Image (tube, rainbow, N blue to C red; front, side, top):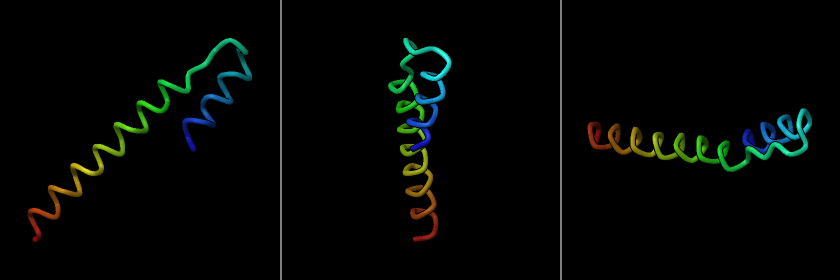
Length: 46
């Protein structure tokens, strides 16, 4: 959802500015980082 909001804001200032791909890349890297951290935490506790 945050990537769509960032894309909408970018399009409001410049209609030719499409940054959805770059926003989605940062969101996906955050999800992957969270999954790695959760796996490490589970391996330490389990």
